[in-house]
Length: 262
Image (cartoon, rainbow, N blue to C red; front, side, top):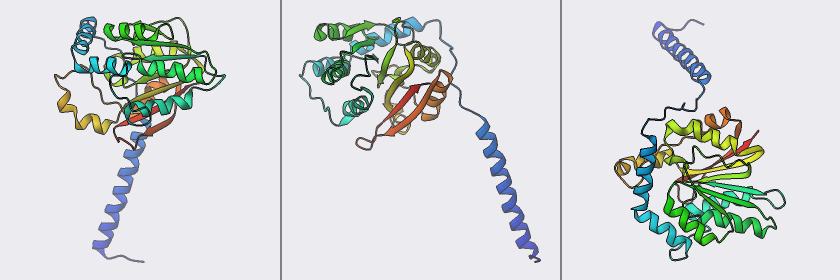
């Protein structure tokens, strides 16, 4: 069949577009995401100290302590906390979960919920919480009365000299600067064993980008955009497999990422 000259040109153009798209797609497919390498600035300790002070001077600091003492409403079935609890219910299993670590535990509200939930399943789980802000750690220790162990420190530099069955980060991952991701994932690898599960709950990238202009100079010093692609890359480089990723329809603000150590 002979096509008119104009049609032949159009067909040739379509074919070239397909070839270009195919080649470009192959190029992008071979370029795998990489976890950011460590580029910690010399004033990192000062930055952390400033962030802790900023938190303790914010309304968020008081609000979380009020939640802990029942002076502020907590939605355990819906909202941000309800989403985290929903994920933990799937990870904390009777007879299988003997240890739980909360990285970025704030005042220990969800840490102590996890301890209580494990206990309700008949598990005397050892539960730990790590938090940068000293005031929150003091409040958690006082309220817990020995039910959990709380440590003040940098989430990206701790070494508790033990591993955990379940590790979770409830809206703390996005406050870790990208230049400390490598260090953070080494901490996660150090504190887990084969079969350990990790839950990371964080705002969706679209939400972070939408409200980014409000964060500059605000109460939270760090607020990074956390993508599924980058999370999976960091996990993979450190021996973890991302096996589930949920975007929560209720608020439409957060996601939950589930990893297993392989």
